[in-house]
Amino acid sequence: MIALVCLLCSVVAYYHFKCTSLQADLKKTQQLRLEERTGRINAEIKNRQDKLSNEEKGEGVGQIGVRPIGMLRSCFNQRNGTPRNSGCVPSARGVLKLRKDVPYTSLEGLEGFSHVWLIGWFHENTNASKEGKIKAKISPPRLGGAKVGLFSTRTPHRPNPISLTVVKLDKIEKNCVYLSGVDMIDDTPILDIKPYIPSYDSLSSAQVPTWILDPPVKPSHWEIHIGGEFDGIIDEHIRGSVLYQNDRKAFLDFVQEVLVIDLRSQHRRDKMNANLLLNTHSVTLDGLTIQFQITDQSLTVTNISNIK
Image 1 (tube, rainbow, N blue to C red):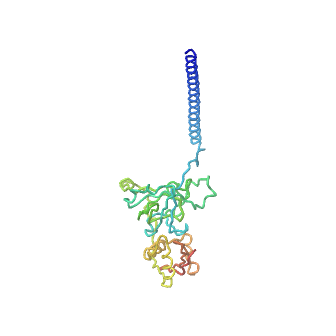
Image 2: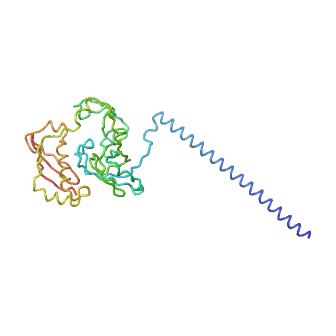
Image 3: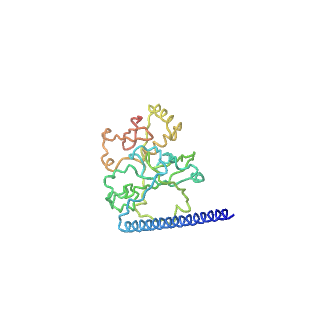
């Protein structure tokens, strides 16, 4: 009996020691976690304060990271020929394809809107070598050489080359958004897409400077001539076109809408010459290089070739 009591006392003593040891270990672990959490919070606070301090000093510029939601497949292969504003070429088509890790269900509900905002990145700017040097004033086409501050214009050459445009939403198929009236070149990274809401985005009380009131694009009065000898290459092209597949009328409307704008720079317009060779120009649209000659009254397509 005495031996049994001694055994029970030993067991109780052992479990008491074990519980005391576990409680001590738990308390130590909790203390370590508290110290770790306190240290992490203090580090985050210091990092935030340092960031705010750097931003106040102007040292935080360029530290914001963005990632495109997808890329735009556009009918404009080059900067040359791309309109300066959306809506100038209503038949210009594009397709925004979302990244694989962006769920296409994120587009649900967007099909109820007729137009959307596209926020993109001017990835082919020619002033990349001058980044870090802000050119404060520029000469918009409508001012005839006069200069204004860059932030009063839509120039792509900005400290952050972000583009903003309104386009027509044609349809949505899974992770692809089909658009028209685009004014972006092929492979433009798209940062975001938002619905255009007239009651919010169109302000009847908005005012603009007088120089903005001139039409952004003054269409020419040329007669556009595209000869029948190009029917074969046009038909072959639209059969394989992603954007204009088997839609000959839409493609020809697109080409004519671009050509009638008069793509030439003011310098080239001023040097209009009676020698047709000097008045020969070209533009690449949806993978076709189109050469044309200009006279005072007409624009005649002289050659069409595939760039592929």
